[in-house]
Length: 406
Image 1: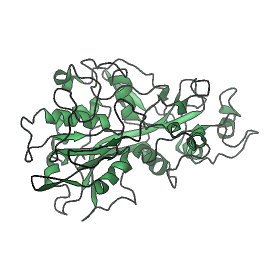
Image 2: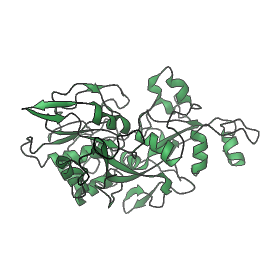
Image 3: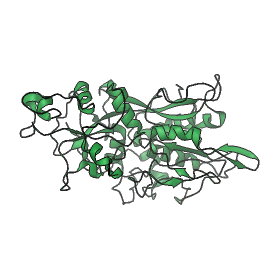
Image 4: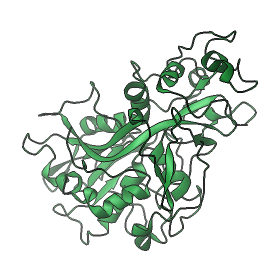
């Protein structure tokens, strides 16, 4: 079944609502009064994945409320969103992550965040050198091109669990029970002509099961921006394809050659890439979407431009737009647990993924740097029972592996 979007929160944020009752749906470094701040050189700063942008905003905000007097020995911790909060489709903004750090393109996505660990440089404060980026958010596992787990490399530290499925418009020609094999054919642009219907069409893929009137229409597999962890996980890990390039059979691929805005940000349904030329939803588009992010947006977040209610998430807003989630092989992506929607525990494990915070490798005995272990380690604050509740507020599934290094 398709998951019907709700703009009413389901009461899942009771654990944090008291402290956040008047917060706007904003992000990027802010203080306890929700005013923008410039992180100090000694503060801890993260960048990267869009999928876990808002839950990390919440986790870091909550921690900073406990820091009465920030100092080099007691710093605040901040994250920069993958894209500007006031313009989520802007993928080119320049930022300085901390006071004194050079400006660079805002890291958008897991790969960009991991690269920033190596490339963003350092800053000096009172004779002490600090990194301009301390950790990266990642919604994909380590790739062969990432620095290795060892001296001079990176450590992937488990934060939570998630899953990814395909999203479509309400008027879609896609069934809501496609299989891994069918999805791989769609995203590799390898559906041969069949049943009297052209290559890449619904009729060639589904035969007589194609929706009436759709058999000769061409499937349009849209992909998120390059460097997206969701894209990498979907294409290479879940579907087993050899790369995570844009599908060359998509309208997005053709349009992006002349219009960079044709490439949507991950986990959003507001891009024109999902619309026909007349502005109506395109029934042939498909898009990989984090189930946790969708749950957070559709069920727990305010309408974009509106202030969050006391029982809604206070970072991020509902950008699901024209898209709705689908099941895989007949299993729905979410189900109701008590009063809230959660990821279906019986969802195909092929599409399950782990969410990480990536840090610089420390030592074999303690891979997480000491100053970050208090946050990301197995006994760190982000693995505490209170913060597990925050993970659920934002649609993700806590794991007993929190803090495990890989």
